[in-house]
Length: 288
Image (tube, rainbow, N blue to C red; front, side):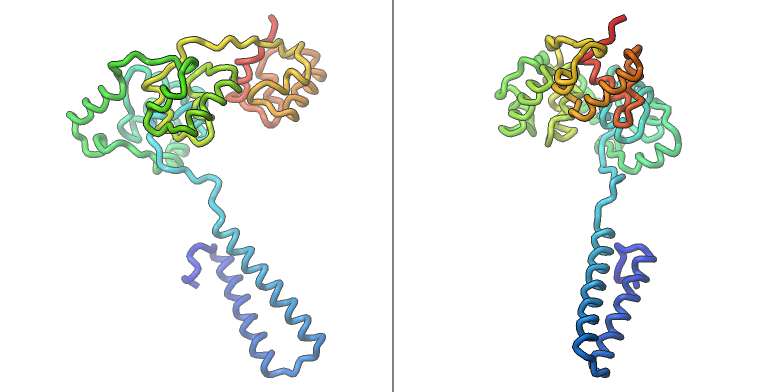
């Protein structure tokens, strides 16, 4: 039974019984004189057993949805924090701490700053990956790296005017990723905040952080916001972060409410959360 470590206990028992049944059927096959009809039934039984074993193996090998891969908690973005289960307030506390040029150096310090619960800390802390200069407690190295990360001799460039060549100067951004960044910027009508870079397909967290060292949002994009209480379905469906079906639900909810009084009214739609609603406010407004 220990030969199937990737199956659960009840799955291992099931497989053992299935294998035992197969052996018994094979013995019976050589001992008993089966008719053609019985042989057909046996073939069907073998086929069914094989399908069940394959099904169990597929389930056991399927990756867990709640797998958290190693990451540096100092670089948690709004999106990353939301995925981890942190509240908006907890994420904001960490971001405010980091804006001071400070770094989290331990699991306990992370909890002290963010005020996250013990249960959530227990869930995500095993995935924390601090730099070697933190783990080795080398204060001199810490000061050197901190200076490197928090200051730059070159003035930051505007991400909204960056060229393909300028983007490719960042380690980890090649020909393909630079094109994706520019295309995504065009789709969004411009970046409102640097955290939107994390939404670019294939752009790893560490690469996003390197981009933040060299770039920033200096000029906000000229986005013409629409009144959510007047916008049409066709106009709403063209807004980034919205699918057509979601746009229909907004129009339907607006009809039920008469008019939206506040953006939190959108929380009545199952697919919507505070993070999504905040991003929609880049393109929509509510007339007072």
